Image (tube, rainbow, N blue to C red):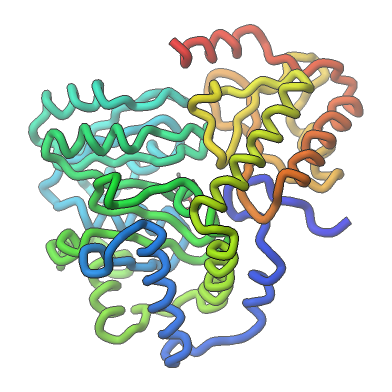
Length: 383
Ligand SMILES: *Cc1c(COP(=O)(O)O)cnc(C)c1O
Protein backbone atom coordinates (compact mmCIF):
# COMPACT_ATOMS: atom_id res chain seq x y z
CA UNK A 1 0.00 0.00 0.00
CA UNK A 2 1.24 3.51 -0.82
CA UNK A 3 0.77 6.68 1.19
CA UNK A 4 -2.48 6.89 3.16
CA UNK A 5 -5.25 9.17 1.92
CA UNK A 6 -5.54 12.30 4.03
CA UNK A 7 -9.22 12.66 4.87
CA UNK A 8 -8.32 15.93 6.53
CA UNK A 9 -9.24 19.42 5.41
CA UNK A 10 -5.72 20.52 4.47
CA UNK A 11 -3.00 19.57 4.10
CA UNK A 12 -4.75 17.05 1.93
CA UNK A 13 -4.00 14.42 -0.68
CA UNK A 14 -2.63 16.06 -3.83
CA UNK A 15 -2.23 14.76 -7.37
CA UNK A 16 1.06 13.20 -8.42
CA UNK A 17 1.57 15.92 -11.03
CA UNK A 18 1.19 18.57 -8.30
CA UNK A 19 3.98 16.92 -6.31
CA UNK A 20 6.09 16.53 -9.46
CA UNK A 21 5.78 20.25 -10.20
CA UNK A 22 8.05 20.82 -7.19
CA UNK A 23 11.03 19.01 -8.71
CA UNK A 24 12.84 22.12 -9.85
CA UNK A 25 14.18 25.28 -8.29
CA UNK A 26 13.03 28.75 -9.18
CA UNK A 27 14.71 32.13 -8.77
CA UNK A 28 12.18 34.41 -7.14
CA UNK A 29 13.41 37.46 -9.08
CA UNK A 30 13.45 35.67 -12.43
CA UNK A 31 11.00 36.61 -15.17
CA UNK A 32 9.59 33.07 -15.42
CA UNK A 33 8.70 33.05 -11.74
CA UNK A 34 7.25 36.55 -11.87
CA UNK A 35 5.06 35.46 -14.77
CA UNK A 36 3.85 32.58 -12.62
CA UNK A 37 2.91 34.96 -9.80
CA UNK A 38 1.03 37.22 -12.23
CA UNK A 39 -0.84 34.25 -13.68
CA UNK A 40 -1.70 32.92 -10.22
CA UNK A 41 -3.16 36.28 -9.20
CA UNK A 42 -5.16 36.56 -12.41
CA UNK A 43 -6.55 33.03 -12.16
CA UNK A 44 -7.64 33.45 -8.55
CA UNK A 45 -9.49 36.67 -9.36
CA UNK A 46 -11.31 34.78 -12.09
CA UNK A 47 -12.36 32.09 -9.61
CA UNK A 48 -13.93 34.79 -7.43
CA UNK A 49 -15.79 36.23 -10.42
CA UNK A 50 -13.86 39.45 -9.82
CA UNK A 51 -12.90 42.02 -12.40
CA UNK A 52 -9.27 43.10 -12.29
CA UNK A 53 -9.13 46.75 -11.31
CA UNK A 54 -12.16 46.47 -9.07
CA UNK A 55 -10.65 43.63 -7.06
CA UNK A 56 -7.04 42.59 -6.51
CA UNK A 57 -5.51 39.28 -5.50
CA UNK A 58 -2.62 39.46 -3.07
CA UNK A 59 -0.87 36.20 -2.14
CA UNK A 60 0.75 36.08 1.31
CA UNK A 61 3.42 33.68 2.61
CA UNK A 62 2.51 31.39 5.50
CA UNK A 63 -0.41 29.18 6.47
CA UNK A 64 -4.02 30.28 6.20
CA UNK A 65 -4.03 31.85 9.66
CA UNK A 66 -1.26 34.24 8.57
CA UNK A 67 -3.46 35.40 5.69
CA UNK A 68 -6.48 35.85 8.00
CA UNK A 69 -4.36 37.92 10.36
CA UNK A 70 -3.05 39.93 7.40
CA UNK A 71 -6.61 40.59 6.19
CA UNK A 72 -7.86 41.68 9.63
CA UNK A 73 -4.80 43.82 10.38
CA UNK A 74 -4.94 45.50 6.98
CA UNK A 75 -8.65 46.11 6.47
CA UNK A 76 -10.00 46.84 9.96
CA UNK A 77 -9.05 50.41 10.88
CA UNK A 78 -7.57 51.01 14.34
CA UNK A 79 -10.78 52.77 15.38
CA UNK A 80 -13.01 50.15 13.74
CA UNK A 81 -15.14 47.60 15.55
CA UNK A 82 -15.79 44.07 14.38
CA UNK A 83 -18.67 41.65 14.86
CA UNK A 84 -17.26 38.13 14.60
CA UNK A 85 -19.76 35.41 13.68
CA UNK A 86 -18.43 32.34 15.46
CA UNK A 87 -19.65 28.75 15.42
CA UNK A 88 -16.43 26.88 15.89
CA UNK A 89 -12.67 27.10 16.23
CA UNK A 90 -11.99 29.33 13.23
CA UNK A 91 -14.49 31.98 14.27
CA UNK A 92 -12.95 31.90 17.75
CA UNK A 93 -9.49 32.24 16.19
CA UNK A 94 -10.58 35.33 14.24
CA UNK A 95 -11.75 36.90 17.52
CA UNK A 96 -8.49 35.95 19.22
CA UNK A 97 -6.55 37.53 16.36
CA UNK A 98 -8.48 40.78 16.80
CA UNK A 99 -7.56 40.72 20.51
CA UNK A 100 -3.88 40.44 19.56
CA UNK A 101 -4.31 43.28 17.09
CA UNK A 102 -6.03 45.46 19.69
CA UNK A 103 -9.14 45.89 17.50
CA UNK A 104 -12.46 46.35 19.28
CA UNK A 105 -14.77 43.44 18.61
CA UNK A 106 -17.82 41.54 19.80
CA UNK A 107 -18.56 37.89 19.12
CA UNK A 108 -21.86 36.33 18.20
CA UNK A 109 -21.05 32.89 19.58
CA UNK A 110 -23.38 30.22 18.24
CA UNK A 111 -21.61 27.41 20.05
CA UNK A 112 -20.25 24.38 18.27
CA UNK A 113 -22.30 24.38 15.09
CA UNK A 114 -25.45 26.51 14.98
CA UNK A 115 -25.49 28.86 11.97
CA UNK A 116 -25.54 32.67 12.49
CA UNK A 117 -28.70 33.95 10.82
CA UNK A 118 -29.53 37.26 9.17
CA UNK A 119 -32.19 38.37 11.65
CA UNK A 120 -30.01 38.06 14.77
CA UNK A 121 -27.06 39.70 13.01
CA UNK A 122 -29.33 42.55 11.97
CA UNK A 123 -30.45 43.07 15.57
CA UNK A 124 -26.86 43.19 16.80
CA UNK A 125 -25.88 45.71 14.12
CA UNK A 126 -28.91 47.89 14.84
CA UNK A 127 -28.07 47.89 18.54
CA UNK A 128 -24.42 48.83 18.04
CA UNK A 129 -23.74 51.57 15.49
CA UNK A 130 -20.00 51.46 16.32
CA UNK A 131 -19.63 48.13 14.49
CA UNK A 132 -17.92 48.82 11.16
CA UNK A 133 -17.07 45.29 9.97
CA UNK A 134 -18.43 41.76 10.19
CA UNK A 135 -16.24 38.68 9.89
CA UNK A 136 -17.87 35.47 8.67
CA UNK A 137 -16.49 31.97 8.26
CA UNK A 138 -17.75 30.48 4.99
CA UNK A 139 -17.37 26.79 5.84
CA UNK A 140 -16.59 26.39 9.57
CA UNK A 141 -14.20 23.48 9.24
CA UNK A 142 -14.50 22.47 12.90
CA UNK A 143 -18.01 21.08 12.35
CA UNK A 144 -18.23 21.24 8.55
CA UNK A 145 -21.19 23.60 8.58
CA UNK A 146 -21.68 25.74 5.52
CA UNK A 147 -22.64 29.14 6.89
CA UNK A 148 -25.22 31.21 4.97
CA UNK A 149 -22.85 33.87 3.60
CA UNK A 150 -25.32 35.29 1.06
CA UNK A 151 -27.88 35.96 3.80
CA UNK A 152 -25.13 37.38 6.03
CA UNK A 153 -23.87 39.68 3.26
CA UNK A 154 -27.35 41.07 2.57
CA UNK A 155 -27.86 41.85 6.25
CA UNK A 156 -24.43 43.46 6.64
CA UNK A 157 -24.70 45.75 3.61
CA UNK A 158 -28.38 46.44 4.31
CA UNK A 159 -27.09 48.04 7.52
CA UNK A 160 -24.23 49.86 5.78
CA UNK A 161 -21.40 47.76 7.26
CA UNK A 162 -18.56 45.85 5.59
CA UNK A 163 -18.02 42.10 5.32
CA UNK A 164 -14.75 40.13 5.46
CA UNK A 165 -14.97 36.41 4.68
CA UNK A 166 -12.73 33.53 5.77
CA UNK A 167 -13.42 31.15 2.89
CA UNK A 168 -10.34 29.09 3.61
CA UNK A 169 -11.89 25.65 3.32
CA UNK A 170 -14.58 26.52 0.75
CA UNK A 171 -12.98 28.72 -1.92
CA UNK A 172 -12.56 26.89 -5.20
CA UNK A 173 -15.29 24.33 -4.51
CA UNK A 174 -18.26 26.39 -3.33
CA UNK A 175 -19.24 29.40 -5.44
CA UNK A 176 -18.26 32.71 -3.88
CA UNK A 177 -18.72 35.25 -6.61
CA UNK A 178 -18.06 38.81 -5.49
CA UNK A 179 -20.57 40.10 -8.02
CA UNK A 180 -23.27 38.11 -6.21
CA UNK A 181 -22.10 38.02 -2.62
CA UNK A 182 -20.91 41.47 -1.70
CA UNK A 183 -17.83 41.68 0.52
CA UNK A 184 -14.63 43.69 0.89
CA UNK A 185 -12.19 40.81 1.15
CA UNK A 186 -12.00 37.04 0.98
CA UNK A 187 -9.17 34.93 2.28
CA UNK A 188 -8.18 31.35 1.41
CA UNK A 189 -5.05 29.24 1.07
CA UNK A 190 -3.15 26.96 -1.28
CA UNK A 191 -3.75 23.67 0.48
CA UNK A 192 -7.52 23.38 0.63
CA UNK A 193 -10.01 23.11 -2.24
CA UNK A 194 -7.53 24.12 -4.94
CA UNK A 195 -5.54 21.04 -3.81
CA UNK A 196 -2.09 22.58 -3.69
CA UNK A 197 0.55 22.03 -1.03
CA UNK A 198 0.87 24.27 2.06
CA UNK A 199 2.98 27.42 1.97
CA UNK A 200 0.87 30.47 1.26
CA UNK A 201 -2.57 32.02 1.45
CA UNK A 202 -4.18 34.75 -0.60
CA UNK A 203 -6.46 37.71 -0.07
CA UNK A 204 -8.91 38.86 -2.72
CA UNK A 205 -9.84 42.41 -1.85
CA UNK A 206 -11.69 45.38 -3.22
CA UNK A 207 -9.08 47.69 -4.67
CA UNK A 208 -10.51 50.81 -3.01
CA UNK A 209 -10.23 49.07 0.40
CA UNK A 210 -6.61 48.19 -0.34
CA UNK A 211 -5.81 51.76 -1.33
CA UNK A 212 -7.41 53.05 1.86
CA UNK A 213 -5.29 50.64 3.94
CA UNK A 214 -1.88 52.18 3.29
CA UNK A 215 0.13 52.40 6.48
CA UNK A 216 -2.55 50.79 8.60
CA UNK A 217 -1.22 47.30 9.25
CA UNK A 218 0.37 46.53 12.61
CA UNK A 219 2.85 44.14 10.99
CA UNK A 220 5.57 44.57 8.39
CA UNK A 221 5.35 41.08 6.93
CA UNK A 222 1.54 40.77 7.09
CA UNK A 223 0.78 44.12 5.44
CA UNK A 224 -1.47 43.24 2.49
CA UNK A 225 -1.25 46.77 1.10
CA UNK A 226 2.56 46.72 1.09
CA UNK A 227 2.67 43.25 -0.50
CA UNK A 228 0.23 44.42 -3.18
CA UNK A 229 2.09 47.67 -3.87
CA UNK A 230 5.35 45.78 -4.24
CA UNK A 231 3.82 43.14 -6.52
CA UNK A 232 2.32 45.81 -8.72
CA UNK A 233 5.67 47.63 -8.97
CA UNK A 234 8.10 44.74 -9.33
CA UNK A 235 6.04 41.61 -9.99
CA UNK A 236 7.78 40.08 -6.99
CA UNK A 237 6.79 38.96 -3.51
CA UNK A 238 8.33 41.23 -0.85
CA UNK A 239 10.15 38.48 1.00
CA UNK A 240 11.25 34.97 -0.02
CA UNK A 241 8.22 33.26 -1.59
CA UNK A 242 7.51 29.52 -1.20
CA UNK A 243 8.61 28.95 -4.81
CA UNK A 244 7.98 25.20 -4.91
CA UNK A 245 4.53 25.53 -3.35
CA UNK A 246 3.68 28.17 -5.94
CA UNK A 247 4.85 25.99 -8.82
CA UNK A 248 2.75 23.14 -7.40
CA UNK A 249 -0.21 25.50 -7.11
CA UNK A 250 0.00 26.41 -10.81
CA UNK A 251 -0.37 22.72 -11.65
CA UNK A 252 -3.21 22.45 -9.11
CA UNK A 253 -4.96 25.38 -10.81
CA UNK A 254 -4.54 23.64 -14.17
CA UNK A 255 -6.19 20.49 -12.81
CA UNK A 256 -8.93 22.60 -11.21
CA UNK A 257 -9.76 24.21 -14.56
CA UNK A 258 -9.61 20.85 -16.36
CA UNK A 259 -12.15 19.47 -13.89
CA UNK A 260 -14.59 22.24 -14.74
CA UNK A 261 -13.55 24.93 -12.25
CA UNK A 262 -15.53 25.64 -9.11
CA UNK A 263 -18.62 23.77 -10.38
CA UNK A 264 -16.68 20.64 -11.33
CA UNK A 265 -14.65 20.58 -8.12
CA UNK A 266 -17.75 21.21 -6.01
CA UNK A 267 -19.64 18.40 -7.77
CA UNK A 268 -16.88 15.85 -7.08
CA UNK A 269 -16.72 16.83 -3.41
CA UNK A 270 -20.52 16.72 -3.10
CA UNK A 271 -20.49 13.21 -4.57
CA UNK A 272 -17.72 12.25 -2.12
CA UNK A 273 -19.85 13.51 0.75
CA UNK A 274 -23.02 11.78 -0.46
CA UNK A 275 -21.32 8.40 -0.86
CA UNK A 276 -19.62 8.79 2.52
CA UNK A 277 -22.73 9.90 4.43
CA UNK A 278 -24.97 7.27 2.86
CA UNK A 279 -22.47 4.49 3.55
CA UNK A 280 -21.73 5.58 7.10
CA UNK A 281 -25.45 5.91 7.91
CA UNK A 282 -25.91 2.36 6.66
CA UNK A 283 -23.37 1.30 9.29
CA UNK A 284 -25.41 3.12 11.93
CA UNK A 285 -23.33 6.32 12.17
CA UNK A 286 -25.13 9.64 12.38
CA UNK A 287 -23.97 13.06 11.21
CA UNK A 288 -23.93 16.00 13.56
CA UNK A 289 -25.59 18.23 10.99
CA UNK A 290 -28.87 17.69 9.22
CA UNK A 291 -28.55 17.48 5.43
CA UNK A 292 -29.40 21.13 4.95
CA UNK A 293 -26.19 22.33 6.66
CA UNK A 294 -23.83 19.55 5.54
CA UNK A 295 -20.99 20.98 3.47
CA UNK A 296 -19.20 19.00 0.78
CA UNK A 297 -15.94 19.82 2.61
CA UNK A 298 -15.88 17.81 5.82
CA UNK A 299 -18.46 15.80 7.74
CA UNK A 300 -18.70 15.40 11.52
CA UNK A 301 -19.98 12.03 12.76
CA UNK A 302 -20.99 11.27 16.33
CA UNK A 303 -18.81 8.64 17.97
CA UNK A 304 -20.82 5.44 18.50
CA UNK A 305 -22.28 4.92 21.97
CA UNK A 306 -21.04 1.31 22.03
CA UNK A 307 -18.72 0.79 25.05
CA UNK A 308 -16.02 -0.80 22.90
CA UNK A 309 -15.71 2.21 20.61
CA UNK A 310 -12.64 4.31 21.24
CA UNK A 311 -11.43 7.00 18.85
CA UNK A 312 -7.70 6.21 19.04
CA UNK A 313 -8.29 2.54 18.21
CA UNK A 314 -10.66 3.49 15.39
CA UNK A 315 -8.10 5.98 14.07
CA UNK A 316 -5.38 3.31 14.09
CA UNK A 317 -7.64 0.73 12.42
CA UNK A 318 -8.52 3.24 9.68
CA UNK A 319 -4.89 4.25 9.20
CA UNK A 320 -3.91 0.60 8.82
CA UNK A 321 -6.41 0.48 5.94
CA UNK A 322 -4.92 3.55 4.28
CA UNK A 323 -7.07 6.39 5.61
CA UNK A 324 -6.13 9.20 7.97
CA UNK A 325 -9.24 10.60 9.66
CA UNK A 326 -9.59 13.60 11.94
CA UNK A 327 -10.66 13.94 15.58
CA UNK A 328 -13.80 15.93 16.33
CA UNK A 329 -13.89 19.39 17.84
CA UNK A 330 -17.23 19.46 19.62
CA UNK A 331 -17.36 20.39 23.28
CA UNK A 332 -20.60 18.62 24.16
CA UNK A 333 -20.41 15.13 22.64
CA UNK A 334 -17.66 12.91 21.22
CA UNK A 335 -17.25 13.00 17.48
CA UNK A 336 -14.82 12.55 14.63
CA UNK A 337 -14.53 14.09 11.19
CA UNK A 338 -13.94 12.84 7.69
CA UNK A 339 -12.83 15.24 4.96
CA UNK A 340 -14.31 15.04 1.46
CA UNK A 341 -11.70 17.28 -0.19
CA UNK A 342 -8.44 16.36 -1.86
CA UNK A 343 -7.41 14.30 -4.85
CA UNK A 344 -9.90 11.46 -4.46
CA UNK A 345 -13.29 10.46 -5.79
CA UNK A 346 -16.39 8.47 -4.88
CA UNK A 347 -14.59 5.13 -5.42
CA UNK A 348 -12.15 6.08 -2.69
CA UNK A 349 -15.06 7.12 -0.47
CA UNK A 350 -16.66 3.69 -0.92
CA UNK A 351 -13.42 2.16 0.33
CA UNK A 352 -13.47 4.56 3.29
CA UNK A 353 -16.91 3.27 4.26
CA UNK A 354 -15.73 -0.33 3.83
CA UNK A 355 -12.72 0.37 6.01
CA UNK A 356 -14.96 1.93 8.68
CA UNK A 357 -17.13 -1.20 8.71
CA UNK A 358 -14.09 -3.47 9.02
CA UNK A 359 -12.57 -1.27 11.73
CA UNK A 360 -15.75 -1.45 13.81
CA UNK A 361 -15.83 -5.22 13.44
CA UNK A 362 -12.20 -5.48 14.51
CA UNK A 363 -13.00 -3.42 17.62
CA UNK A 364 -16.03 -5.57 18.44
CA UNK A 365 -18.49 -2.73 17.88
CA UNK A 366 -21.65 -4.18 16.37
CA UNK A 367 -23.58 -0.93 16.02
CA UNK A 368 -22.35 2.59 15.32
CA UNK A 369 -25.48 4.25 16.72
CA UNK A 370 -24.70 7.47 18.63
CA UNK A 371 -25.66 8.07 22.27
CA UNK A 372 -29.11 9.49 22.98
CA UNK A 373 -27.77 12.87 24.15
CA UNK A 374 -26.03 13.32 20.80
CA UNK A 375 -29.35 12.97 19.02
CA UNK A 376 -30.87 15.49 21.43
CA UNK A 377 -28.10 17.93 20.48
CA UNK A 378 -28.96 17.37 16.88
CA UNK A 379 -32.64 18.02 17.45
CA UNK A 380 -31.68 21.45 18.85
CA UNK A 381 -30.13 22.29 15.51
CA UNK A 382 -33.24 21.34 13.60
CA UNK A 383 -35.41 23.48 15.88
C1 LIG B 1 -7.71 25.76 7.44
C2 LIG B 1 -8.47 26.94 7.90
C3 LIG B 1 -7.83 28.13 8.34
C4 LIG B 1 -6.34 28.29 8.37
O1 LIG B 1 -5.68 27.32 9.07
P1 LIG B 1 -4.10 27.12 8.93
O2 LIG B 1 -3.87 25.92 9.77
O3 LIG B 1 -3.44 28.34 9.44
O4 LIG B 1 -3.81 26.92 7.46
C5 LIG B 1 -8.63 29.21 8.66
N1 LIG B 1 -9.96 29.15 8.60
C6 LIG B 1 -10.61 28.04 8.18
C7 LIG B 1 -12.10 28.06 8.11
C8 LIG B 1 -9.88 26.90 7.83
O5 LIG B 1 -10.53 25.79 7.42
